[in-house]
Length: 394
Ligand SMILES: *Cc1c(COP(=O)(O)O)cnc(C)c1O
Image 1 (cartoon, protein in one colour):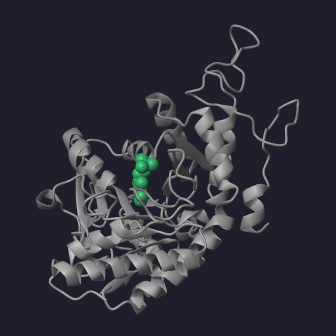
Image 2: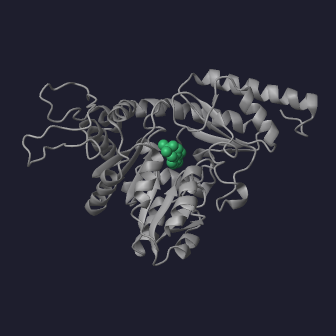
């Protein structure tokens, strides 16, 4: 079956004697046992719940993996993966990471005796030099967020596996519709399912998928033992969101491509970051491992004040952190999603202060472009009136 069919074709309620056509919310903390000495398939909701099992199976199937685990947030999923690393062992991570992941790695894991090295994953020699005998986990995002840099998953996995390290890819910006890291030799794929998988900015969730049985058993022990599994109602919302993943992304992606082209043509935009606009080498890698460019893009204007004015002058783009929802959003990552660590302490690639990130929604693209156009015109007028930007914006 093709992907869009698979999104809608799965057993919604394994074993339910009423055979409902849609997955019910099994809103219960416990399950009655047949007798005092034997457990049934489910006993306690932290350990397992039928609604969560359906969505975990579905995400695993879509990522081409054997087992899936859903967590209360994306960061809970990332935390679970970091539990695979023991004190004294190390993580090698790409230096263009989601701000919350960096906060977890640098401020919480450090205290547990887990070292993290941040290196530029676009240079494979640097990656090879950074991975050592203590390296347990190699961690990356591609395309990165918010600079949309491309990392070669197969090549990194090849290098990591030579040293026996486990490779984890945060696939939140692409979703399994556009990129399936397990098929590219990664060992673990994870998601902030809050983003494209849920797609409606109405629930927080995380997911981890693996193929290896031993890794699967370890992750189940962590999910059950630490108690951050996804609740039944949130599992239901996530499952409902996933059904329209390809429908939403087809529309959002074509809107994003049109907006990237619109921005690229504006004199006051100095650079647009979007996978399709990457340099030839990065573009070739991206095309070889993903089937689309997604719906997140960013751009710089050269002037933080100009960027802020454009962001605040839009009417259809909500100023919010996060991305991947059906509503368009706009943000200044340096001040919002990536502000959790002071610039001076960051070991990551620095994010330009004038960087604007746009998550393109499913609205009519003509309205979106018209709105961005009026926001740029407003900013240009302000700049002419006050000369605050020190330049004539277009
Ligand atoms: C949002 C995000 C996370 C964290 O997920 P939450 O659901 O917010 O906890 C992790 N990785 C990436 C790439 C993200 O965008």
